[in-house]
Image 1 (cartoon, rainbow, N blue to C red):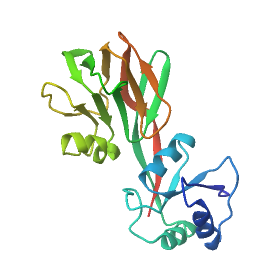
Image 2: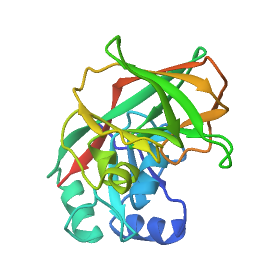
Image 3: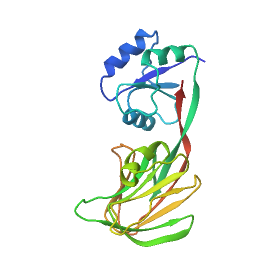
Image 4: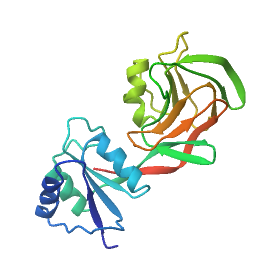
Length: 227
């Protein structure tokens, strides 16, 4: 199959283009079947948001890049040209509220909309009520890939399977949880306002009192070329 490649970079894009073209590849403007990201983890997340489900070849231009190959960019491009790679699938999460949905590769974040005021919420897991009144800055729901980000900064831990739930600066101590992959979490806002957003996306959904956010594993996966 003909490779239709695009580059996605948030900065130093021209350097990425020069690198790719020097390896003998041509780039297209749109409708790719491979997206070459040039940056780090943040660039990969933005690329997945713009080009969901299209396989990503991750080139390093950042110190923070968990999915970058240990090989040099030049070696990665040669291995890609020779077809010496496998496709790794990464779990994503989705949140649904008020007939709207957002999808994240890293995490779903429910956060107080006004940093001067806490948000109050209750939550249920698989239909079983867990807590009636949590007060704090919100909650973070992470994938295994995202567990080394905001989730780890709260919990000082990571995990390899399932869905992680961390309580963000709650007034009462609540232990973080690593839930099963098929868990369904419902968050009911009892006092807002709050927002829900995914990864480093600028889009968000405003939450008011009584709104219910459902969070679960997405049917969509991120596909990363692994060398």
